[in-house]
Every structure is written in C-alpha cells, then in structure tokens.
Amino acid sequence: MSKNPAVLRSKKITVEFSGFKAINELDFQVNRNTVHFVIGPNGAGKTTLLDVICGNARASKGSITFNEKYELAKMSENEIVHRGISRKFQAPSVFAHLTVFENLEIAMKQKKTLRSILRAKMTKEEEQKLTDMLDLIGLTSEKDKSAGSLAHGQKQWLEIAMVLMQEPDLVLLDEPIAGMSKQERIKTGELITKIAKERAVLIVEHDMDFVKDYADVVTVMHEGQLLFEGSMEDVQKDPKVREVYLGR
Ligand code: ADP
Image (cartoon, rainbow, N blue to C red; front, side, top):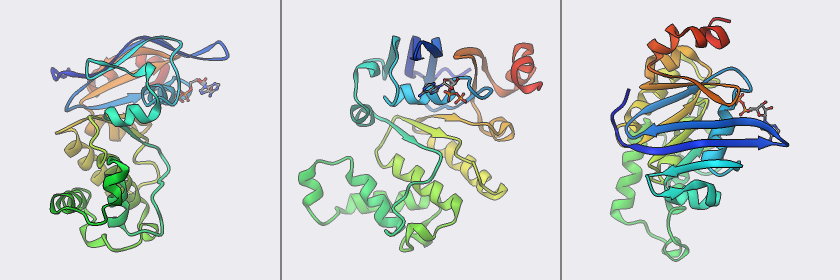
C-alpha cells in the first residue's frame, strides 16, 4: 500500500437519492503519486463517488477533505476545480472545430483571470507548457489539425491534457479506455502512469486487465461501501470480492 501523503480523505460520507444510500458511510483515501482504481459491480456507487468528490453530488453526512485543509462538501464545482481537482468524463468533449493546439490553449487560459485572457499573446513559458503537453500526449505532429478530425483515442488524450492544463493535484477519470483499440489502451496506461509521477489519479474502470496492468491501489465498492482495498493481486485473492464481483 502506498506511503505517499493523502490528497483526499473521506470520513463516513453518505450520498442519498430520495432516501436510497448510493454511498453509505464510506471511509476512503487517495494518496499522492498513485494510480488508484475504483471497481465494483453496476450500482456499487463508483460514479456517485466521483460525483461527490467533484461537487456534482452532495453528501448528506460525513466529510471529504482535500489536501488536508479544504472541506469539499462546502464548495461549489468551480471552487473544487480551482483548488485542484479536475475530472474527465467518459465521452470526449473537445472543441471539434478548433485545432489541437487551440483546445489546449483554451484549457490553459481557463485557469487565468479574465484580464489576462484578454491579453492576446501567450508568453514563451505558456507556449512551452503547451508544447510539453503535446509531447506528453504524443500529439505534437497533430497540433494544427482540427480536434474533430482526431481518432477516438487521440481525442481522449487531448481531453486528458486539457484537464491537466488546470494543474490539478487530483485527476478523476471515468472509464478512460472505453472504445479504445489495444494499442490505444497501452498508450493511455503509459500516459496515466506518467501523470501519477506528479499527481494522484483516481479512475473508475470496468476493464480488469487494464486495472491489473496499471493499478497501484484498487478499491472495490459494493452497495455504496468499501468491500476491499489493496493491490490488484490481493483483490483477486479476496473471497468477498470473488463472491460479489470477480467470481461471477
Ligand atoms: P456505479 O457507477 O457503481 O454503477 P452509481 O454510482 O451510478 O453506481 O449508482 C449507485 C446507485 O445509486 C445505483 O443504484 C443508482 O441507481 C443510484 N443513483 C445514482 N445516481 C442517482 C440519481 N441521480 N438519482 C437516483 N438514484 C441514483
């Protein structure tokens, strides 16, 4: 288990929908420099967990603390992004008619004040930042293409890069390899591994082979609660997990 400091801690959070507890008194922690997967059967509460972290759902009980000082339950979605949590949803949502470079430029400028957005020219440092990001996602030679013309995997990487331009400490990803080819999955896994060298990455994923290849920590959820947590190897051996999930 990772010894890195915690970036996120939830204490006994409950999320209810008309009295139904989608998350039920969940204690949960994400550490820095960790690729942390959340798995579990349909309806286990995985999406709701990402929702409550990014402010898209509200906890009726408990606390979620970010970087040991910010109480997320009291913040708006925008404040949460500003503090350093960014989420990429499953479907790509790039600006199709803008180039790859322009998409990244917009994502970078979202972090800035209106006044500085109005200043037309980017600084040398900003241009370098975009160039480095293109290199990280392997889209340097595609930078002047319209984002709409990219292959599915490339769009997903661009969107991950747009999330990274907001300089989050915690990146939330929703099934990042859905619809990808084998090669694209490998590239995505490598990208996630690189991202976790500087940040924490929390991923909801159904593909167990992908989880096995890239997880540092795996949390198994069941009926809104934590069923098991550990390495994928330990998860696969656990009889409770086998019963509710992997052994189906
Ligand atoms: P998972 O992502 O693990 O499949 P979810 O977090 O989407 O699970 O859902 C957990 C439970 O909460 C499910 O039973 C689901 O039907 C219920 N649920 C999720 N969102 C809502 C909502 N907005 N209104 C009512 N019930 C919801």
